[in-house]
Length: 102
Image (cartoon, rainbow, N blue to C red; front, side, top):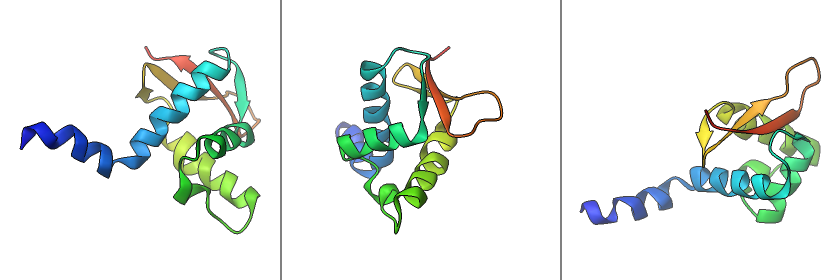
């Protein structure tokens, strides 16, 4: 039964796989440490066709806000594929950077 554990986890944890895909694409598209807006990362998720349940909503603004809270804020500062999502310091909200995980 242990041989199927990784396959089972991948099927059950679709959000984790989506998160890895987002971080991998983000790291390839921009320089590490560059600031991205939530709207840009939402567009990247659309391009990759990931986080479909989170991206659904009545309005784009609402879907972007939900994406920022349920994905970016939730996983900030956690290591993902060797990187870490970091909230931009300061008063401006909706700004994120991707840093090498420590």
